[in-house]
Image (cartoon, rainbow, N blue to C red; front, side):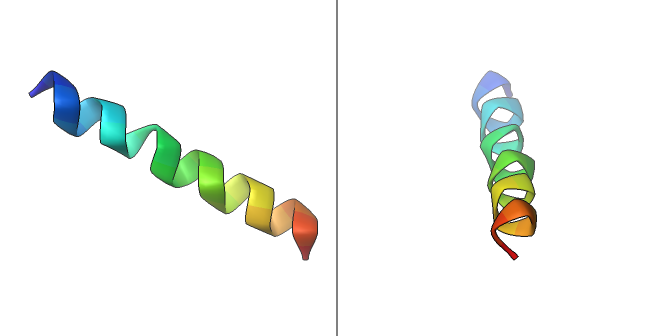
Length: 22
């Protein structure tokens, strides 16, 4: 369960970086 939560953290973080790149 802890791994599933850890994977959800980097997902949104990646989107934030893409947003700034746009």
